[in-house]
Image (cartoon, rainbow, N blue to C red; front, side, top):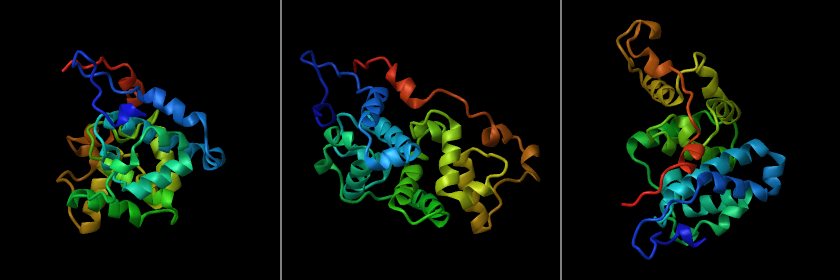
Length: 225
């Protein structure tokens, strides 16, 4: 679709609204692949991620792979397996062959890879996607386009069970990734004797309720800048 590979400006020169991620999600789910019919939850996760990524990348050729830390071949394989409708929405020729990570990102991806529950390509892709989306400002489940935090918990239990088992107190996942890295390196994360005596307790363990990013962005006002 042209809206993903060209500058979305009307004749007046005003920037047009980005494609609605909720609409993209519905379209991606409208024609499930055999993989998607066999494993609807994994298909849901990948379609959420792609719907949000495609919307964010609109008008920026090659930006989808960067936002998911997936190179061209990985992105193509993911789409063919789990969201074939996305083929018409993404110009894969514009995606980079390889997507590099900085040192911080690479450490998180290595953490996730260390605790992979299987050797599937899907779990490897999710390690990269979780890593990159963890750099975004909202709750991780929101930056994946998921409907609620519980879906992220299920994803972690299914794909990274060893790591999920360590999060016994249900720490926020972004915080938990960094805490796990510190513990493995022998660093003390904070000076408080216990988490409940720490002044930042709510920041690490507080409520993660909120609105799905797909729903929020679908109601966003068009920008005229």
